[in-house]
Image (cartoon, each protein chain N blue to C red):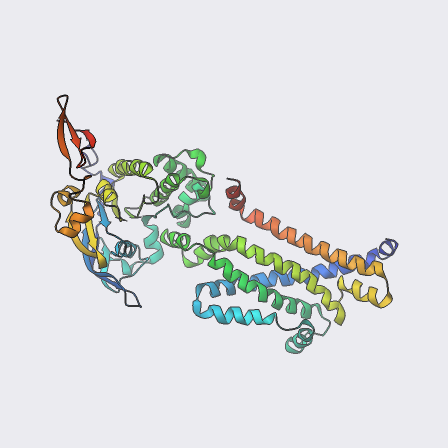
Length: 288
Length: 214
């Protein structure tokens, strides 16, 4: 995030805090598998927190606890100090934006109707909700001509954008993202990540997202939480802190410390500083 | 042709009887099978008893069924209600399994996405599961439609009039034209109702065509 007026000093309508707190949550399934073992974390409002880990780290289970797709066996998840278990599931879910891998769109609804899902469920008129949906499509960089198409007629990247638009439609304070850009090719992914950062600079939601891709965690997260099996926190901190100081071998190998991609050097070329990776491949020019 | 033109009035009446006996059981079995199929698809514990139970109905030979139903429900032997009840049971025998398969075909990730965006259970059923189960449900419904139309003719044997009466009558009195008319019209009715199902589905599921064109 960069310093720009109205972004760091949040405007009044965003004063409302949206702090998510996991307090010693534990999830054990009936077959005895422990997905999450006594996990605690505070997600500060208006920040982007990435939960990153390989499969079996329990990261998706943690995410689903926030909107009660999964209830913990013990411990509590609370939003602004209110235990989510005391809230109505359906109302809670409508108040939280959810972005799924590959968009998670309803295949039998047009793009505009998909975006309008939550406002319509909340009783907004279809006409009004569709009109708002067009604005949201533009916001996520989609041509409004796509509004009447069905999801299967869109590319993966377009579907993902529609998924983001749908999550924003009810103007939630909290956004949950499950491997948001995992199903699209690397070029589209980089583009979507850049746009997501720009969007977040503008809207300032509290965002929790899970990914197995450390690159995505570093690209989007203000704070990154590296998880071991059973959602044990291996390290937690800003991307730069984790890169500079991996807590142990597990984190080091997870972030790829020591690999060619992560060990950059500076080489002088024609009086300029060119950054090269461990294999000597140039990756960019150092600005002074 | 001569026979047909002289008996047009009777044939028309039998055609109307046939439709009156076919359409209610098709609609009733759809109405009964959708909730049962959804139950079977949603609960592994109920699935086997429901599917086996309804499947066994098809093993009951039709003539004894025409005797049992009046005895059980107090209808008179030749009442259309007997026929409609029997055909509804046969329809369910096929359609409960079809509906269970249809609901099982709804992708789990779509169900999950719909729940995560705040659909209530009821809303999820009506606006997501039922439409997405539509294509598979339609294929079973078409089988039931055609089989019901042809089964209605069996009633002629116990004196419930339908296009089947044209066969029984034609055999007894040796009128080939009557038999042929009965067969042709039964096939026509079956095709017409089947086409109606397809048209209704096309109207109800516009995304199907849009996506297959893409």
